[in-house]
Length: 308
Image 1 (cartoon, rainbow, N blue to C red):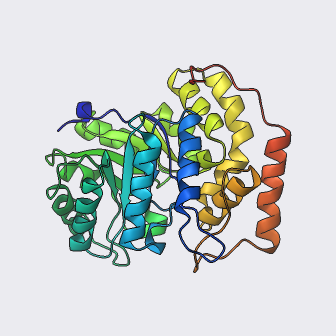
Image 2: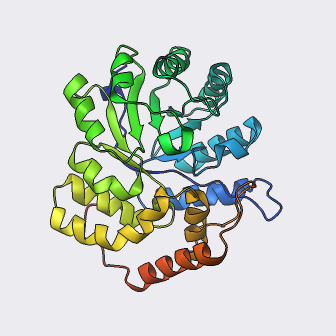
């Protein structure tokens, strides 16, 4: 398998999982969120990731979300399932279940809780990838998962054919250049941190797994396409408007922030499962002010070929 065997580019929202007031899974509302995103022109769906509160769900609930995503996508866009487990064996089992549900690929996170050394992280990813025929995206988010998937680790995995994609949320866009210098275009590159997306595209990102595109999907897809079309003056104008929102994706409480934005824009519920608690006080007021300002100054979007 090579990068040419997949067609992953554009904006893939890191889809939120919807919960009821009693914290039970609201699969109907989650399905609606996904359908709306596809209708707004996003290029893929990533479910059961960080924003999807993977670690707050049981395996059965994760599979229900995956199945809902496949139904919402109806083959129009790829569905990628997040894999976040405590051990390599648990992760392999979850990949097997996701494959049975018909996903188009998996996004594999480092083993949770344990801070792996580089050779351990590489072995974790290799063991999972070799246990499946699915395309595999590796997800690097050192602030959250405490393991740093460096370009050197990626280079060591270049012989593993179905590891085809790398999502980086370190915020260090130099890594994309270092990786391309080392192995050319061996990996599809995805930006994973919202507030460095324009810089990431400028240095070669093929796609963007976006948190804030849950609430502003058309703006996210338009920004991405403007950058890929090298229409940087237009992209910068939209980026400046978007940036206060995009900064919310870089906070420790990003899930609460993004889901509150969904609620304020009428796209979902702000309910998160404990231990994540609702925003309060200054944090709540800040997010509400950012969203109110964004809505009051929401720009007309340039034509980038989004489907109606």
